[in-house]
Length: 167
Image (cartoon, rainbow, N blue to C red; front, side, top):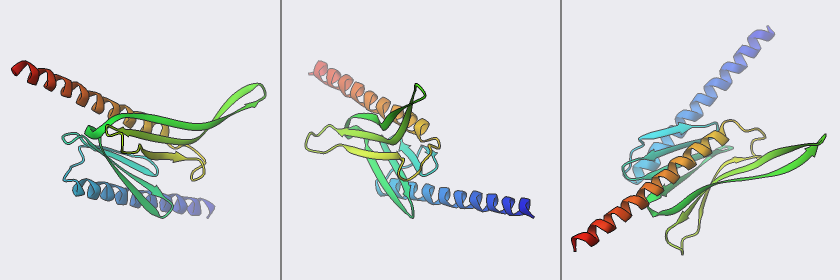
């Protein structure tokens, strides 16, 4: 009897998780559609989904917060930089230093100095007490964003050099 109840609970959790994932994928697709973009690559975390249109160099994020979804879009061609921000505390227990991650954010800086930095929260200890793949996810997508911005800078420099040599 107890095994049946445990199995039923596990199935309910699995189906609820699958339902939330479907909603997040749909939300991501809808945001991309608003910008006439398509999602070429995406990855789903526990409470977050990140995707990218590689042609238009746009990144899209949907973050689940309790019973609502927050959505973000970042035009990487308008970004000067991207960095992963980790906030936390250090404690010492039995002569051993332990780090507790409290927040993980991905921050984008615009090329336009009048536009404030855009920060996307991937993990918050106050909402979820344990990391569930967010660290790997933010590192991966931070690297993807940095590479895209770097490639855009290199292409701009090449185009500028080519245009100057033509004239």
